[in-house]
Image (cartoon, rainbow, N blue to C red; front, side):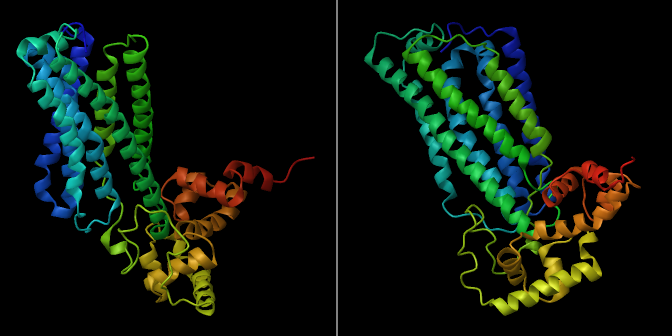
Length: 401
């Protein structure tokens, strides 16, 4: 709680900018939903809700400057929005990592329970008489009242619990994204724009901030007062909003319905780690797996399908006339490679003579053999050869005496 309702100019400017940016992004997302089908809109709806929550979190200094009498109640609404932010990011992540035609998950309403917990803080503040609210939130002192002491204790516990709840959601989101990226490697040969590393990085940073917030909260209330810059919160919120605006607004779900093998682990297992029981019910025997493996190698060597940047498991399966699940099982269990690694190994092997010759740029070679980006080529090259293209070329060049 602050000692004064008058925010410093920098905090006010940053909060107003964050609020305006969040509302603008939410409005743009909502207004643009009419042109897409329902399943294509869903992730945009959740992102709009994320922006709405971030906008509400930004209203503290603004409400203090423009409506001081309502600042205590605004604080309760900010706590409610804080409890809603992590579940909303989780639901946004779900829709980005599910197949585009996946039906809504049952029991989605359970993610509203944290919001109800946060709202209890708002109603607790509402039970206080107006003079007590002012004394607690404007003057920063605790009235000599059991009621006020009870509300203050409840708010403290809610803030502490918020960090725990948010941390749990952060862990679940990171786990979901890791499983999703593993799924991508079973389906696509190029995953640029799908892998959502920006979201993983954002969640990891937020998780670190949440852990720091717990430490600060405990030290400030139980040991010694901590004097942090008032602008720190608005800076973090504005940074978070800008990141979602730059990355999230243009982000599309990565799993196209047409690329999901029928009867495969498409969605129900998407947030579970791969296990040895993945192909438990498959009828694939060892002899059949060897035949499929030979067929895969032959079609890559003779027809060079790896040159297609859009090559997917479905495309390859149709080309050789084998069910996608059987191709995936052969790759994973017989060749011990994901589809992504299998195709990119062929691409790198095709690139090696040209890299050694040094007669063309790395970017041209990468595009010619089926990669979409230079960075993906470098990563795959290092994985296959254990070195960089330049080091490989230098090692292949004859040295002068």
